[in-house]
Structure formats: structure tokens, C-alpha cells
Image (cartoon, rainbow, N blue to C red; front, side, top):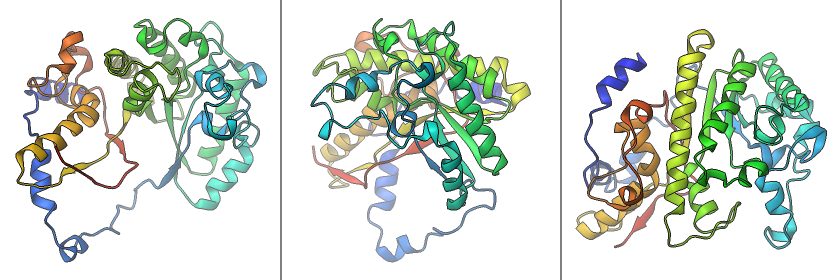
Length: 345
């Protein structure tokens, strides 16, 4: 099925500007409240997965417990003034020591799925597979087994921003060597946990990783390069790492484990303030191309960046290889932090 899908979609052209978002703007922005109320908002299939989501750094604590290596977020929050009140994730929700309590809370919520992330440096303290931390492996095994015993489907994110500091010391996501290092880590996770985990997500919010970590410097590793091209280099490496891991799972594990794998993209929907103003339309579309399209277009469409009319993505890098990057996903992981924004050129 996946091979047929790849061959069917691999030759699709680049997106036009404005893209198909314009169709949605024109169709729905002028709707009355009555028309919107006609949607069947409460209708879900019986097998719909209702769940909650967390990330390792935000809940686990135990930042240096039982052989865990430091991550870039550990070191970042230990610098005075980086976080309000100098708060850290050293303890956080203490989930590393409260597996049973967390499982109780999940059962009480009556959810049937739970998305959480692995801490790379809890499994590989220095980011490399020569340094496996058995305590970290045991922790995730305990959590996964507890979820399944409660009929809660585990969904695992492999990377939710907390890069092992040892890998940042060699350049972090600016270093293409991280493609194979990430693949090695993912391969170990598939081999170790894939008999029970059937939903995998490679990266959480790659736009934020690239933009806040390597442009504004608001997040670790705090590289300030605005304006600059570092965020695009980082995004390029992340895309290739995602594709590498996708194909590792596809070729080595899918047949026996029967799981699926994708990436989680944060997409904030925007609309032109005036639907018939061409400058407003182009501005809104440009925002979507540079955020959603940046990662969605190579993965879900044709292995290339959005719109040949925009030179920005092609100034620095070769076109992604359709053989490796295109359709490297089985589902679309999307979430949004904001309500609809309206943009004026």
C-alpha cells in the first residue's frame, strides 16, 4: 500500500501561490453562525482514540537519576534568568518516580490513548547506542506495560526537544551526523518497545525546534541567527532524519510489528483579513507556506519544499530526494495552539 501511495504521489508539482488554502478561506470565512452550528461536532466513530499528551522533560523529573545524561533543556534551565522564577524540570511532576500514580490518573480520566515522549538521554546518556541505560529502559517498559494493562494505547514521540547535551556539543541539529545518530536511537526503540508500541512520532513541532532554537534563541540551544539561514539548515537535517527513521521502521519492523509512524506538526491556521484583497491573500498564504508547508510539503506531497516561486528554501540546499523523503508518513499529526489569526499584508 505504501509503495503504491509513494509512486502515485511522488510526481506531484509544487504548490501554487496562493495554495488551496484559498478555497477554504472563500468557502468558510463568510459562514453565518447558523451554518457553522450545522456541523456534527459531537459525532465520532466508536473506535476513536481519546487521549492526553505529555513530554518527557515537562513531567519526568529525575534529571540526573539512575545514570540519565543531561539534555539541552536541563542545562538551559540551570542558567539563571533563562526561565521565569528560575524554574527547572529537575523534579517537574516527578513522573519518573510516580508511574503508578500517573497510570491511576489516566484511568480516572477514562482515556483510551496516551501520547508521551522518550527522553533520548535517559535511554542513551550520551546520545549514542554504546551507552544504553538499563534503568531508563526499565522505566519506559513499566509505563508501556501499565498502559496496556489498563487498555490505554501508548503513542510514543521519539524527540520532544530534549537533545542529549553530548550531541549538542558536536553541533546539535546543525550537524548532519545527527541523522544517523537519531536513526540509531530510533532503531533501538523500535527493537525494544515496538512489540507493544504501534503508534510512533519522530519529531514534535519541528518548526519550533528550528525557529526558537536556532533563530530567535528563545529555546535551547539558544542559537541567535536572526536574520539568517541556520534555522533552514536545521530544518533540512530534521527532515532527512525523519525520513531516515521512517524508512528504517518501514523496512525492518513494520511487517512484524504492524505499527505506523509519522511526525507531529504544529499548524496555526491564518486567514486574510479581507478575502478579496490579493495582498492579504498572499500574506496569509506565505505564512502557511513558511510554517505548515515547510515540513508538510516535503513529507506529504513531493519531497520538495513549498512553491518554486519562493526561492528562500532553495538558496542554501539541494532539493530533497523524492526516493527518500516523499510520503514518509502514514498519518498526519497536527495540533494548534491558537485560534484563527487574520493577516494583513
